[in-house]
Length: 251
Ligand code: PGA
Image 1 (cartoon, rainbow, N blue to C red):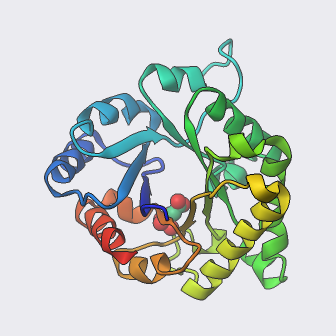
Image 2: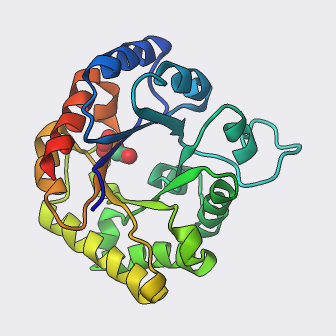
């Protein structure tokens, strides 16, 4: 049984003052029974790690380049992240896939680059509204997971966390129902088991998409949902703390 994991994703938002405010609040009020991650804009990662060091919040990045160090102006690779103490990173968020054209192949390369540098990847998968309406949601997600499975051994997959984020639920206030979310999580777990067999790792699966404090309990009561990935609500200190508090007692 996993401890619940609440991962906040600030996206291209936030400020130095919010970082200080949140680190101060979490130092005194963070619930012990919940693992908490905060994925920050890369310019804040190093200072975030320092500021949260007294709280049990892990701070990490939202993206990386999979290439080895070299002439790639403006990019950040796994070794640079590691250099500043970063041990966790989001990979393949739907905004990167949709806005920046990130392919399954790149998501796999980024995931491997993380694993090779002892950075734990949180890999996002999920379908669009059109794909869901066309009855293709499971097939789309299975394809995204399939690309990862083809490239990773069971031992490598053991360090991967997967977040199912239906794209139509991101930033829309339209949360997937707990039943729909559970159904997809169960399907992801089955897909992993079918592929890896007895070696299959007990992968942590998170749900993401318009998560707010009031919906967390029901989501985490589902047998295959081990945590939540939170965008907008992770920019509000009280709400993010409330989500962590709710998660800590939900399972
Ligand atoms: P949201 O974002 O909570 O604002 O919907 C979730 C995400 O994109 O990770």
